[in-house]
Length: 367
Ligand SMILES: [Zn+2]
Ligand SMILES: [Zn+2]
Image 1 (cartoon, protein in one colour):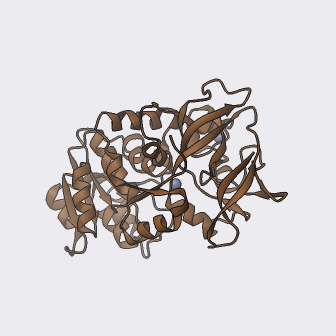
Image 2 (tube, protein in one colour):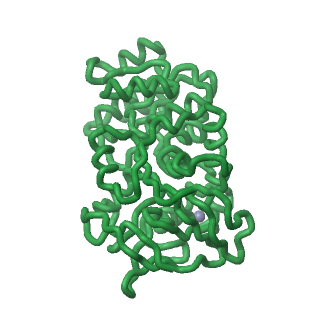
């Protein structure tokens, strides 16, 4: 079928609204009419070829919409279901079989390889293949995705709210809930108050963490962090020694820190804000630390530094769970969202980089 999509033809090139051909879903796939799609930093990583993906390419990996058709082997979804589409995995390797799809052996190949789990793409233009992204390419009016990555949600919720749960929000909230196992006894500090950091704050809050410290450089964002559940805020531009301020709040240090910036000073401060045997979670894809004192900062204090991706969530349960928390008023994700028409992606990106928008979501079709 012919669909409208934002096609990228060259490295760092513009998003071009064009017609592309979308294949019918295969036996284990579904066709989704996209109602909305979040925009994530990783889309820009793809557009700039931070990972080399064959061009042309349709980005977008936080799709949400309504199921139109399902393949012959799909038994947990039906036409009319409201769904969020999350990251891709093959659903067959040992990790996927153990219900740990975030450790899928083929994670990189499927999400960043331009193809679906069978090694072929569903998108074409003028007789040529067009690369997919995260097995969904949600910057399009329709997506075909593996049913394993398509999460049914309650149908009384705006799908514009559901869209960003599939990657950015899940990454932050899941890191706190599924990776750090935060509970009422926990003290955490979140470094960086963008979409993922705000989601980590909401995740820690819904888990009942007793201390949630937001560290950022923008007073407006820090005020919003408080609304989302932060108990303390630190404006890093106004203090010389962030770890000292954290230790002033929690003398032994905090149990968990998470950094979304990839900035070496932020990351070192995040590590030094930890108590003994605390856990540091870096979630920025890029970032290096010069002259890192592994002995003094990690080994002797017996701290853990754990890379984590997609909040290590089992999306079929975690995405609907976040929707329920939102409906209960415990997970106010709407407060970090700004909505744009499908044709306004350039404005959405501009507002995101200027800090005007924390998390931009494209409205693609009517719900
Ligand atoms: Zn797998
Ligand atoms: Zn993402």
